Image (cartoon, rainbow, N blue to C red; front, side):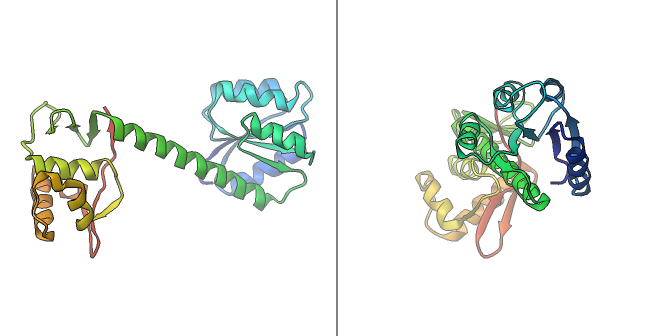
Amino acid sequence: MMGARILCVDDDENLQEVLKQYLEDNGANVMQALNGRDALEKAKTIHLDVILLDLALPDSAGVDLIKGMHDCTDAALIVVSGKSDTTEKIICLEMGADDYITKPFELRELAARIKAVRRRREVGESSKESTSTQKAERVKFMGWCLDRTQYQLFDENNQSAGLTTGEFKLLEALVLAPRRTYSREQLFELTRDANFDGFDRAIDIQIARLRKKLGNPDLIKTIRGVGYMFCGDTKAA
């Protein structure tokens, strides 16, 4: 939970203080709102990771606030309610709540749910970014641009690195799956149209040439006994 920005929306000030102390002791940065209007204002102006939303607020119905929150923030939303009614729980989840917890609750359970919704969000964002990169005609990393339309790699000055077709295919396979380890056999399967021979040594030679042309041997890491991994951060250009 380290560094998470959490907005607690509840008109119970005692509960607010208990949550604030517990969550901040666990590394979170906690903000508070006692009503719906204040909650929406904070959601609009502060970057939040998680919102804990009570449904029984003095100025608005919590269910209506779910849509309002989604209109102004992409933070994960956990409904915190004194009602255990299944119908209400289903409505909240269908309206876009990421989770629903019923009062009274164990603070450790709340912390676990916060971590869980954050993990799901991170995985979702990573998946979307990965899909976007895989579809992109150009992929940027560490000052380089991999141009998939020209089968070439260009530096910041738009100068070509002079990759062969085989080197390009191999780099493309690695760049499109950053931090994933590929065995030599898998890399051969992904790049065999580039006229590699079937020996492991062929892949090793191509990797060595790529590292030299990239000028940064740490970008392609050797995973001993397994294969190779691309370690750079990528984005669609």
